[in-house]
Length: 505
Image 1 (cartoon, helix red, strand yellow):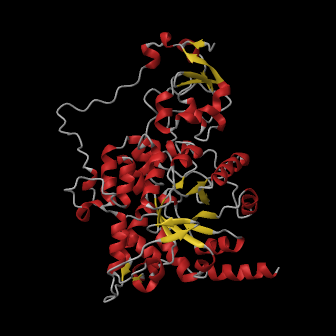
Image 2 (cartoon, rainbow, N blue to C red):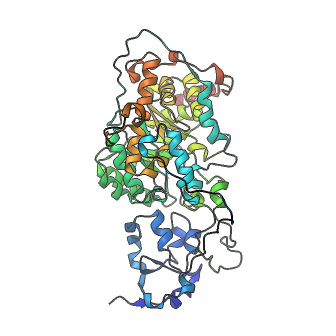
């Protein structure tokens, strides 16, 4: 018979060297687990001696904690719960006389573009979720420049081209794409919507675009793969404990649903994300008693992003491709390329592709906008496009942005935040962000309001004079003079000379 554990007993185990928590009625000894927690030890210690069910369920699948079944002490004795033990701080009261009114979320069919999903998210997400999803590093310069630079790249439309029909389809790593778009990996989707990544995966499958699963998911990799009917990509953070990474790669490969691994390399250490760090710990969190000199002392919140990054291996380097090749035969892309020299290196050492990305401005602030890096590669080492696949994400919000990237040689474009914001409406929101499935009342005009991204890509393709986007796209359809003065010196030429000398050796 499972023993009952009183709240008094649980509260005695609230130190760094002796930590118990309660999750969904079970009492766990997490003393040894906390330092190895992928989300960081701090978030465990915040709830030592307390019930952590609410914060756990807000970001995790119920199944994830089964890994700690061997650390179960017993079951919570509910008869011993006191008001003091279970109390939560009250939400701040609005000032008397406040004129604030409740935000009325628009109906999904009234959402006309991806920006409107963001506006809804800003008004409906919890403070923690909004800070995590919208925030970036330091002053957010790179995050904002990612998008702003599209304004300085102009189309050069060709007319009289008979664009009555247009083809947007393509194939990428055995995935059929209705449009050259994929959902970029973003963690902690359960903070947005109860089904989190499950809804994203189903929505992507129904919309004809690949979903790239994040390592930092709310649900397990197996759970997400089980609900999707279409192939996916898998974003991989390399764990300091390499066998844990190898175990995930085996699951991905054995599923036969994962068609490519995107190894994130632009975040070897966590950046400073002030909006995220300003969010206080959960209302019923009590920081534990710790030994003098412990790094956990203090009441400053580490933030959701920083707390989930402690497992990342900062020793990752180009030589690790050999190790990755030894554990999988899946295509491997390096994600986080931010200059032409690294694109050349990736092709030279044998990666199957690259993802031009600055982590949505979440890594090094003032790193170059993603579209500028794509232009840099296109200008200085165009041969890369013939050797490997080139994907890109960062700042894409309009179908015209996608078309511009394809004209510069990209094989597909990733969007992360927009789909995270659309997830506020659940799976239907994800699907609506791509294309309406005609699930609205008959009186709703899909021509006027229902189709978002796919229709924008199609219209932009037709307006510039192309009939098959992936076949016809080229730099002749765009004018990049407005940003070319910001290209760095051609360092790629010296990189090519270095590589030639290296090959001779």
